[in-house]
Length: 144
Image 1 (cartoon, helix red, strand yellow):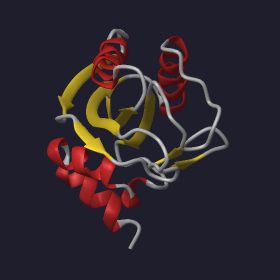
Image 2 (cartoon, helix red, strand yellow; image 1 turned 90 degrees about the horizontal axis):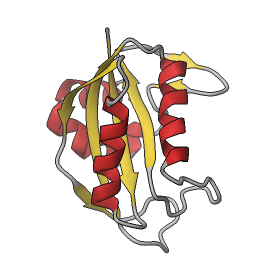
Image 3 (cartoon, helix red, strand yellow; image 1 turned 90 degrees about the vertical axis):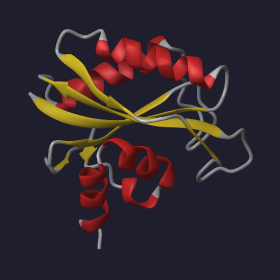
């Protein structure tokens, strides 16, 4: 099984409840098991700043899904939860990103892992440091 590190965020609706629901949905798949969960972190918006603060957290999962199948599964959860992709970096009910998938480096039209901007975003790195400090350090080191 592979280990994947995910970043989850929300800033409209009831973010803590939506994040908990997203984790429940993610781990409902028979090929996914929860390994670790960070605490909830409230952060200022990144990119587009005239919107509510975000609730963010990170989780570690073990999975038999390959990276593209995992992405499709996560996007189906976002869609089922009401995610609409209207505005880049805009408000959202739920956002689920694959930050790393083992130490795999993949660039495809649908997915890049590790996440190409993770090393720049404290709202990703701070929760990840709680549950996977080695992965957080690896993300930073590979961009130096």
